[in-house]
Amino acid sequence: MVKLTFYGGVGEIGGNKILLEDDKGKLFLDFGYPYKKYRDFYEEYLKPRAGAGLLDLLVMGLLPHLEGIYRTDLETGNLWQQFRPAGHYRRLEGVEGVLLTHAHLDHSGHISCLREDIPVYATATTAFVTKAIQDSGKADFDQQVCYFTPRVEERVPGLKQGAYIASSSGDRQRRFSVADESRLRKEARDFWAKGTRQKKLDSQPLDDFGNCSFNLRCWPVDHSIPGACAWGIETSSGWLIYSGDLRLHGKRADLTEAFMKEARQLQPRALILEGTNVNKATNIAEEEVRKNAFKAIDSARGLVVADFPARDVDRLLTFLQVAKDTNRKLAILPKDAYLLKTMRLLEAEIPDIGQEDAIVIYQETTASRSPAQWLQKTYEEYSSKVVLAKDVASNQSDFVLCFSFWDLNELPSIQPRAGGLYVFSSSEPHNEEQQMDFWRLHHWLDRFGLRRFGLPVQKNADWEIPEKEKGLHASGHACGPDLLRVAREIQPEVLIPVHSEKPEFYVDSLANSGINVTLPTEGGTVGI
Ligand SMILES: [Zn+2]
Image (tube, rainbow, N blue to C red; front, side, top):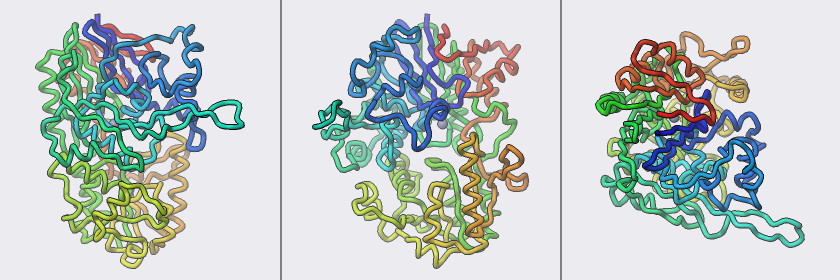
């Protein structure tokens, strides 16, 4: 019998951690960061203690109590002793790898805690995006997906207790096995092998996943981050399909369609399907976003700020097109430039920043004395493209500035003139913390007299986008009717919904379809 145990992604959007056990071996399907569980205890200034390693995450129920799968350098003292008597404790050995669907942290983040000799199976694009994100961001110890610095215990004179600190040996990369290794060019391999921080990277070669004991299929699908895929695993009970996150209304919908056809041909035993947007009846396509954004920006006088999700390269390219069509330049942040450059190593259709007249790079005003290497190199490589706050300030109607809420503190250096426009092209707030951010965002825009378009406004307890300003965000997730189409086209014997707050949707909607819907429980096992 094949067993699936759900350690995350049950009744919540994200945090997927699914253990597959078969006579052939054991695999995890994603190993994500459970944002919702973190929010119950933590916030920006109250975080799990890096020096305490796994302890905080295990005690607070953020990581499953599975001894044997985690980095031993994150163990402090006799860590596991206290967990062994509990019912949900288990010793787990022989995990062959993690099948990672994409680089959003709610699917990938807790790979940071896994032993480095457990390989991560992914597309090359996903592997590269995990590196670009980590190179150009501040990853806490529990979000270091691509590489990590092992921790060592050191005695501190005068203190009763030693301290766990990052070792000086440098960063160690995880083993990634990618589906499409043969198409990597030399520049791409060089990017993978190179550290960008001060210490060197102990790099692992990317290899193909031919040596996994399961027969695997990896299908690229359309989602709001490059490199997303769905997986097929041939188990002793037949083929198991895992959708990851997907949609049928994006620029690469044809990929998702091809996945559905090929998965159906395998006559799968089971399908694990996401259900983020089961409540939505329709979708907005990326092309509609472009048209609506064009209308809003074409009539704007003065500075335009465009706020869209990080790492959504499709949306960035949509705004690039709109910038060109409205005779403006798209000013992106260095981390976006770094991601585009990384993507271009694998996908020739991504624009070359150096050759694209309509792209410039905005340099933040308060530069550090010793910028990180990736940042310095980005500024050097594209030096003719760098614009400063004063350049934007003196030619405000020449730019579409790609800022999010977190970049607003640059505005005092730019001082946008009244009448400028803030275009919001992202999703509505999902929790109270995000609502507070929207409240602040409105204050910022009032302060500078910026008009807003597509921005949610407070209506009683809810935040909603005004009716006339909808249509500026294409979700990364398929709507309810599209998800049912995915289920019916693939036609598995059993469907297991994950990554959803309303998994019952599938039970009601697929009655009499010949598909048995099984709802997983947190920490529970489903036999297939
Ligand atoms: Zn996602």
